[in-house]
Image (tube, rainbow, N blue to C red; front, side, top):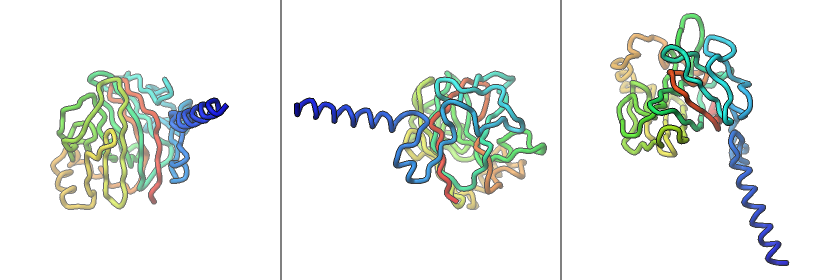
Length: 232
């Protein structure tokens, strides 16, 4: 009898732990800390095309936000309908071999901006593991490279990402490790932007709020467990 009770108790805790770790849900700890789900695992409610309405190259597949990769050099990006100022964002991603994508944040839309990256910084998503330049995974794209402790899983395997921005301090994580940190209010940052491909884009990185955008760069890519905590 005691053995049966003990076994039942073990099963209860095992299945309870599994339930808490289910994709696209909040754990009790995340809930109490103020995290919010941006993707429910079933619909694209809360998302839209950049400078459009219904996304044409994005759908829900395998409980993830999936990009077909169609379109000439990519197609439409998908972004949150809501805007965010300071925030902490967590997400998981996987991408096809040689694929390219990105998470662009504080994005503004409108007729004067044809692309999200003209206003928002980009966390690079890419199929590579041993590149450490400003185009590598986890970089502040074309401005700051990731550190050498960056480790990325192979194509079609899941990776975790995280972006935190507060009072101008930006931090990028790849698979639980901090790989990039910069202060957007610093002179160093201004100098690096001036020496980047964004030097002629007067709106780049200037908005104090904006949308979260997933980039279609012509590759199949999946995003899930997209969670945000507002910091302002």
